[in-house]
Amino acid sequence: MSNGDIFTGEVLGTAILILFGAGVCAAVTLHHSKARAAGWVVIAFGWGFGVLAGAYTSAPLSGGHLNPAVTVGIAVDTGEWDKVPLYIAGQLTGAVIGAVLAWLTYYAQFRANADKETSGPTLGIFATAPEIRNPVANLVTEIIATAALVLPILGFGKNAGIGIGPVAGAEAGIYGSGISVLLVSLLVVGIGLSLGGPTGYAINPARDLGPRLVHALLPIPNKGTSDWSYAWIPVVGPLLGGLLGGVVFNAAF
Image 1 (cartoon, rainbow, N blue to C red):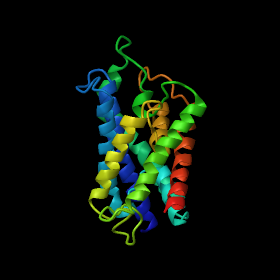
Image 2: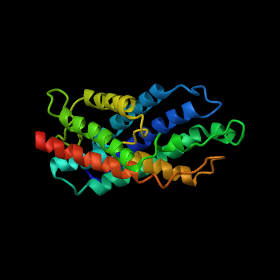
Image 3: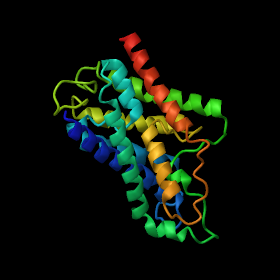
């Protein structure tokens, strides 16, 4: 895979992921949305479908990592670190683009948020926040949830017919069969349902950092704080979780 293909693939795939993910959060959160208050299950499936669409789109170009933690886990497994900065740069760029697109999609609803009687903070549409603010507990949650993402992704490659581990050939990327992306998407849904309660399951530094930056910069009425004091946890936690997942996989297999 060329550097251009990797960057383009990760930008496109991550932008689609965030468009779907921030989009479903906006749909459930904002007033005057037909999906208002649809609930956590809808959010979990929205993010899972975002992974499905983004990974299938980008896999032929870049392998469809869409997540710095996944990139780190794969690098631990393969020992190939030279492309890691390029992958992460594409993922962060795509996350910013996806967040802007979600804002444009719900522009009228965001504008309606200027009505103080129905307005509310909008950070949760773009980034994560803990239900109980405890930095150690929040960090541990993100580490565990991300390891629970990366370890199965690497482990899927050991199952015949799934082939999600790194394979030869630029056209194959990291995905060896058509079902592999679907399985990862369902895995993300499962993590959201089972492990997302404490922190909102960032499990992806680009997914949180890029949209949080967009939230800080966009002219969103009554948007509230962007909570930068918490922002390091959904970056450091997933990176440590991706590293842990890669190390455990190497030790076990």
